[in-house]
Amino acid sequence: MKKPVSKQEIKKTTPQPEAKTVVKPTRAFTKELAREIVKNLTALGKLTARPFQRQTPTEIKPTVIPKGEYPILIDTSVFIDGRIYAIVNSGFLVATLLVSQSVLGELQHIADSADSIRRTKGRRGLEVLNALKNQRNNPGVTLKIISDPQKEVVEVDQKLIQLAKRWKCRLLTVDFNLAQVARAQGVKVMNINDLAQALKVALITGEEVTVKITHDGKERQQGVGYLSDGTMVVVEETKDKIGQEIVVLITKVHQTPAGQLFFARLK
Image (cartoon, rainbow, N blue to C red):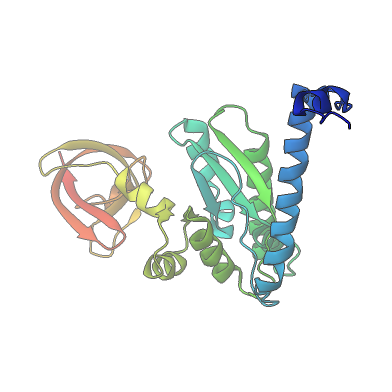
């Protein structure tokens, strides 16, 4: 009769499995795996989100605002007027002057006009534009020619207003009507004529000034002269002094929509 086999003997005779060696992943392998997971998740997100995006074919893409400090959109009338060049050279203005293609095209159209006066104005405007672009006296002012994306708007004034509203920049002009319409639509307007009025000489009654009589006035014996800033002075009893520089006393200051008008008499 055989002796029963114990559990200890069975365990000894049964072959035991070999111990497995665990290999830890390297840091470079872990980073690469994480990068691939993020890339796949991003691609999956774009794929699932694309069908839910609405596509509007008539939607106007937002215009990129031109880079530059204190952007100012320039109207055609500013170049024809020409005073902007002296203002820039004075150093009182620091800005990025933006000139749209529509303004450039309007200047060229005026310069090609059959009318000699309009042609002269257009050419002067182009000369002022080129002078501003090449000026070096005021490094705080730069001029940039920008594209005009608004093909559906025909009038140059309306294009300027829409661009100023979209870019939230100021509009520089000497056109009174354009300034009024732009302000009514919430655009900040800078009018060179307003600046000129602010720089007029401030005189008071009784002050002495020297003025040259250039022509006679509306009333008898009146002579008319102008100060250095263009302010008109009407002087009594000076009709016979046309062409002469005389010292006069201010007797009255009259405010008009165009500015101040001075009345004076001989000292």
